[in-house]
Length: 96
Image (cartoon, rainbow, N blue to C red; front, side, top):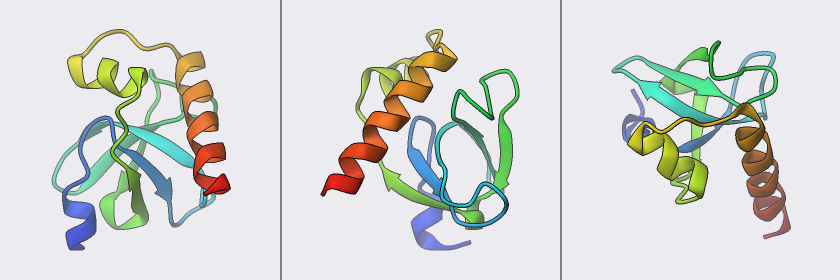
């Protein structure tokens, strides 16, 4: 396991590095030693998360957005909120 991927936790934003979803942004909603469970609100809604090995995801940032706070605290998050937040973060990251 890569050191950079071992500290990915719930509510972090990651980018897929491998697979047909390569380059897509996701929120982490659950994690164990081997896998991350990822959602983006569109192709991967909250009720059907994507299971991806840690080595195939790259940490982008530790988000402190409203959605990230909800995920950490266990509050209900809507798929639309995930989509809007990830789109905003991707635009902000691309403009830097």
